[in-house]
Amino acid sequence: MDKLIRWFLVFVLFGLLVLVRAFEAKLFYDPLIQHFRYYYLYEALPEFNNLKLFFFVFLRYILNMIISLGIIYVIFKNMRLIKFSVKFYSVAFIVMSLVYYVLLNAGIMNDQWLTFYIRRFLIHPLFVLILIPAFYYQKMLVKQSK
Image (cartoon, rainbow, N blue to C red; front, side):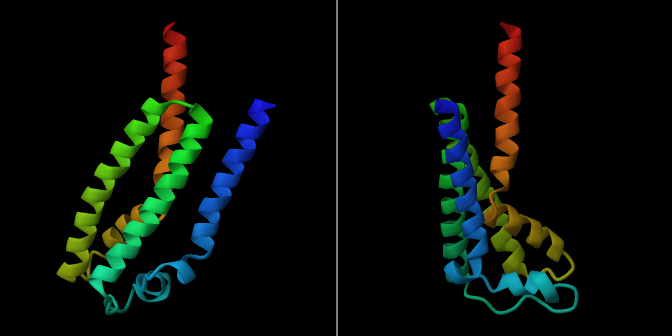
């Protein structure tokens, strides 16, 4: 029964990630959504409020991170993995947000793909899809070495 509850919780938490994505336009300020959906090939970046944009990118990143940490905890029940994940998410956010800020404010028209993909890692919960298999693989390696 414990395993069934854990899988249900993982399903609910992934559902929350889907809801964050589904309601992104209503919950978060992001004028780049439409730009990268339609206009990126032939228009420059739209006007945006730097402070507001980065606040909402940070908010969305934190929300996705918290839900992702919940998923990792429910699957592995290991606080060491949570501590590592928090450090990983923190460093990743600092590095990527600095690069994202520089790219957006430098007005690099020819390199919008780099801006697009860094933005994608900041606003979507892609790291959980990387960390779960990595932690599972590590767990299997530890079992094999015993």
